[in-house]
Image (cartoon, rainbow over all chains, first blue to last red; front, side, top):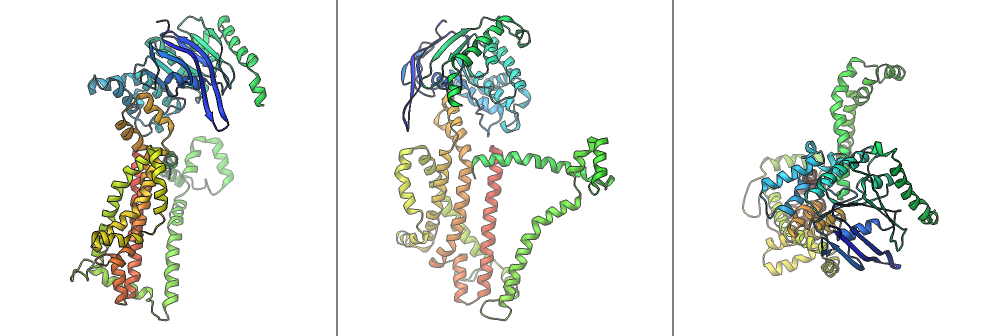
Length: 266
Length: 322
């Protein structure tokens, strides 16, 4: 499907104590089914705001948003979110956290055994069989984030939305999870939108990189198609001239064309 | 006592446990090389040779020191009690209307020899008096929990209702519960339910306010999860709100019980019947001052037990749920 997610003329204005604050304006973006999109930009450019809009957690001030032909009216399990800080419920085990989502989506049609099977499969997908009965405070940050991904994937969402999912992790764990995510996305053909501020992550994972201008009143600056064959391997790509060019293009956008905010802030 | 500090406590406990587990190990290795912690220099050299023994030797600092830690925990309170009783003795040993520790102790021995006797409605053992006070607190507090906790949830969820009812709560909360006693007597026409009703009034405020505050402080992240999953209101309450609010609720319960136990003594002095408050007043009329002092200790100890058991319960429940 060519136009799986459609975002047309979307703007977001917040009412603040100092008056109206225009966070986003004139956002136009269509996402194909199975596509992996990265949203990248400096902090405060409204990447997360855009993601929340797609998730339905906030409503746009202007414009129209469609997902699979229907207007996005609010949050729902067909647009699963992996939150930046994992947001697992601390009083539930990893299994129970995932089960809560599975039960909500499939509980009406399927029996308990089948629901448990689905939960176990999702946990297995992120390689956490051994930690399934542990509580979130008993596992590492990377494992928590994997449970968050398992919870999102277990719902078999139409769109997987990820808000800097690996931002709080160390570089080695992040690389490992990126590789896992690539495998999972290849296997499930999930349509994914990921907010990131990591250039390498964006180039490695995405089909297209949506680069946002600086806020306030941020919008889409450029969209970069990443035509690297899959499966991708970070080590071989490191010397690939095409990969290096894509990386340079994103860096150029971020640090030359959109550098002024950094100076203003400094 | 916020949810945050709860989880903070929890993560802190792990290293302590680990240190405890290592302690016996360290203890045994210490006996084999007792010099390690006395002489610093050779110990350092040993560190260079066998780094593996280093953490063990440090974690297991000698049994004597661990006994010292126990002593540090027990000795000061013990000393405080001795000083208190000493001052009491010094203040009363020349005679006077207030009995000294020795007289009180003798009276207590007699009193506690048979705490559960019954010689008619106005002459019962101290055990019965304490139990009937506890019963009143239990009933009044139970009703307060039944009303206060759901009301707290509602106020926490609805900004409108909260804005509507909060001024009323702020107006009524500082009123001494005893001011409500005549109203209770008027409505119930009997002393006993009036006292219970007074307990209800004084217990309900902390319960409402803490529960409402807990509901308002449920992290937005958890609520976003609920929204993305589109959970039913029932699931939101049972899986997210209730566990998140539990620590606040338990704080409310603890404050309520504490206040209720404070108030019951005064309420019973006014209403009479059987109960520790009434007993104090009765013994004052009998001029048995040593019994009043015993009652003060009993009230204090029961209050302490109530408080500590609720703290234990809170710790157990939040440990399970966090």
